[in-house]
Length: 375
Image (tube, rainbow, N blue to C red; front, side, top):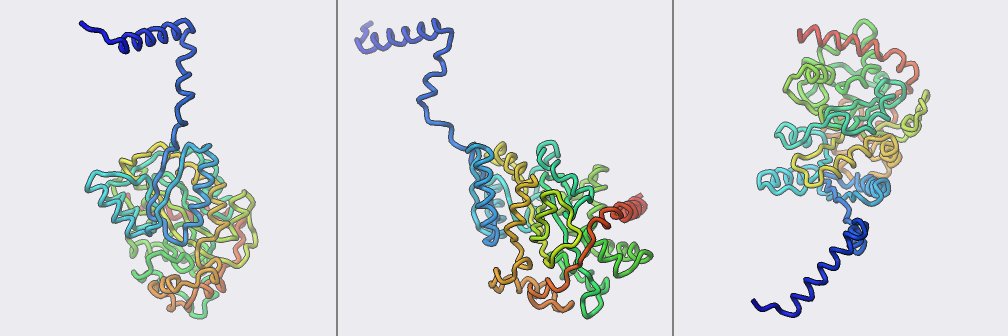
């Protein structure tokens, strides 16, 4: 067999390197890694970010990069809800997954969950949600619900129903055209509507109202407690509150996110339900979980509220006709609301500390009603 000079010399060099490594007790093994390029950041792709929320995700992406020391990079495509939903469905059909998280108006992630495309997460996967437990107990302004899909849900800002010129009735809220877009006129997001109902119908009439509205509305935020109890009992049906829901609220919540109760909130209202769900077969699942955990923390929630994404927070910042079109589609004129500026006239000056002390009583009453009805 002929041995070429180059092969022989290369073999000898390799043997020498091997002995050198052995003689150093393996200490030199890591040396070649120093010459390699540092590991690239794990990219987490987010779909469904609408134009109004680009600023939020720009800020969040920067925070994630800093908090993970560059190990996770968030990229988001502001396609909007419906096109992003269609894209994920196309990916699933073609088994070509590039999306990690879907952020969008609530029906879209709900539909992904029903189609088996969103992954269910235990609370333990997202330890940062523990920062928000004080809100979940009703200690502060912000109502927070930790969901079975991981992220916290925010809702607040009760409206003084009696401030409307035309008295409201349950028939207005029961209109199927109200899709729970506007918490100022929709009591279906439990328990944030309790003060409205108690004010309208009194201590003796609020539970009857709840029974009627719960029987009428079958989807979206309806039956929140019914749904939660159903999950605990292992029932299979799913509604939107099983997703990770983020309610984008207004400036008056800054202090509550920081941990200070607000007893006399400023005039301002705006709650926009947005969900974020982990897509099954996400190519960057580890990074996506990290992002979900971080945005579940109080610090990220505060950024969300500092920006004030809802048009009702700063109407002058949203001259686009789409925001007023939303009111029109939701039949807002029926209660005298013609623009987002009109919403601020009806904000309820709530004593949050007082309500925190008595909310449990209403919750327990309603849970008992649900359990009685379900058997």
